[in-house]
Image (cartoon, rainbow, N blue to C red):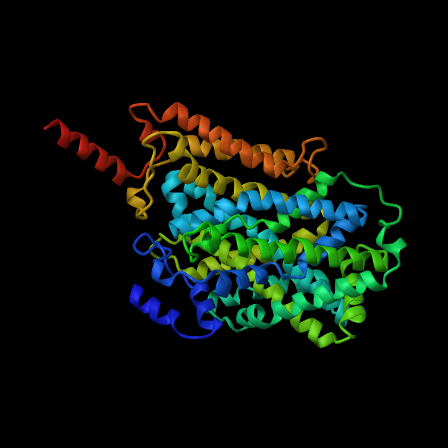
Length: 492
């Protein structure tokens, strides 16, 4: 599709056309892989509503119930969500800014930064990690349906929701997603705000200062890691490549999204759990409908379904782009096949994640460790290293085709694998481990991000001035050929 045609579509009023463009693979190939400035979208008209919608899912209220189950009192819960929010902002603002400046998808930037081998590794991470959240979100919606209508069996309904949830990405049907952004999400935010206000006005002080009976208090780092998993997408560049290439275009969407999803909704979930003295989110949601929505069951069903579907659309879109980067180059492969693969993966996760709390932690911590670590290396490469090492410039003004991509950025790949292995082990993710973060290891995902950034900077410093430094660092072949041509020309 030509740039002019895209611009024409952008001028069609209404959110549904805009969302249809997001779901389709626009500006995601080597021929047409950078979003032109002419179709970048407004911070307040597009990106703030988008991020509020992404964080307005009821799973973020379920986070409050989860934190209540850890034995946290209200003050401890607030400490957890505030620390996780600060940690995520420190990571996500440069990630979002990178996407806004480069205008490329996470996968396309991965080609330039990591080379062929590294890009495949990162794409596997991006393909798998969101599917765990597809399963969790689908199961959360099934729990809410059960609390409203006693629909069972919950797990298998969740599996069905996860598999059917790929529909929007297959057909480009955006009616539910448009409804979620422009109606369901704002109404849900207002409802939850009213819920919190009413709860604090009508709940005894003793309840607000209580914790779950008979449960020892978990370390605060456990809650922070869980909350980070809820906050993190990892592919922030994908969602911000349509933003204006300015820092001020990235902060408001992230701030207001987190205000909703990491502060307001978990607060509501914790208060409801305290009111019913149970971490069972189904009981908490039923209490919310009775307590603050005047018993309007159908409205609760409508809001819950629309917002959960919208959140899972983003999860599936992230996984789908990675799958296309892995398989899309095959001549006989079709995008529909990728949709089938990830729908089956999402269905499996909807069955697997609810089996026990260890699986829940594996999902949350793996997402927080894997994809963001790759993103950190990418923005260190693009935003930091050119300021440290004179002449360092991995030009990304063009997206290299696969035959122009280097075999690998070996310092980048080593840094990625070391940091991810540290993060996965420290989070107890590996087979044979408990599934829970190890005691005394601190906020493991943040430590993994820091390890990746520091190790990559050191390895680039050791490599950059070598005669074959650019080749070791996986600069695209076009950059190496241009350098060789310039050197030949200078010697003549």
